Picture 1 (cartoon, rainbow, N blue to C red):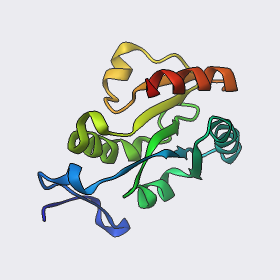
Picture 2 (cartoon, helix red, strand yellow):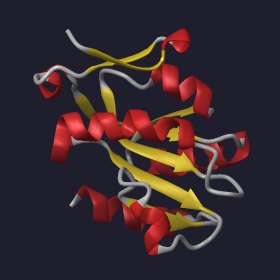
Picture 3 (spheres, helix red, strand yellow):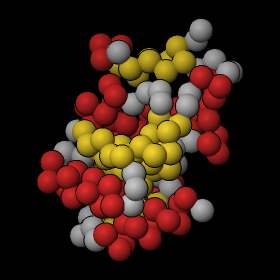
Picture 4 (tube, one colour):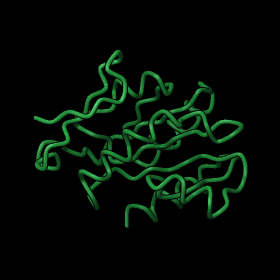
Length: 148
């Protein structure tokens, strides 16, 4: 087994063998909400619950440890004031996306400002950006679009 280590002190290893996609299972009923603001995580989690998902709300450091098999079908990253709060997760999400291809979890970024095309290109794992303030209608429409 080949392992790629993002931070061995935290135990963040992901099997990068060619059969990685066979080992990782995605649970489409689960969602992971990641952000520094507990209030934002609770609000987003409630919206996800109403849409039928089972959310798990964590800060970025805890999410690094918890992200594993089974993978959630949806990952919501709260970028915070500067859209950088969840940057530590990007390498791991990139690795997962590379291993799983089209079957990777869908990733949403909650943003306080409009992201330019260049900024989005720097985040290849982000499938959609939702502008704050978050409303149930806005988030639900993006979730529905990503599920199709």
